[in-house]
Length: 198
Image 1 (tube, one colour):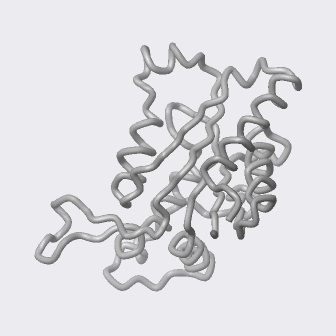
Image 2 (cartoon, helix red, strand yellow; image 1 turned 120 degrees about the vertical axis):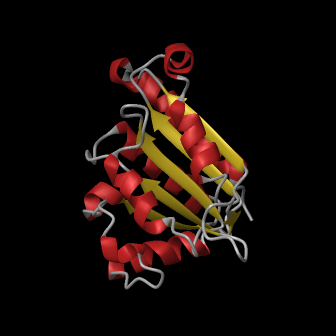
């Protein structure tokens, strides 16, 4: 299987980067083809251009490559911190520019975009690993866990992916090395369970 990992964190030494690398290592150990896009390291431009909104847009090389990786993926793994109840701008921009109509979803014949889209992605399984500096109970009770809706309903649900596993590691800012090792073991186990050896 081909699994696409998308990482959004500006610090290459972050725990998010460690999560992404652990996921990639687990996939390789299980014999999967792995594509890892570290958006910040790549300098991915998150700003959607007006020309990209056209019915038949001329897309640059970077966006075309990301689209091909998304379309050909059998599974997806997203890794990012919870910032203001959202993914970082790099990942929001990646969704804007790459998870496009005609690529990830379409509208039925006669629908001009006002209806419910139909998912097009080949991938049917997605994992989302988040870090947070808010306790899980507070995230749910005070904020309503917006990332749960963003990923499961607004993004993956729209693209036809209903098998979504999301795990938030918190409170990461006060975690020590021993705790992070335990969390990374959980990442490897979750990835191996979701995408076992072929």
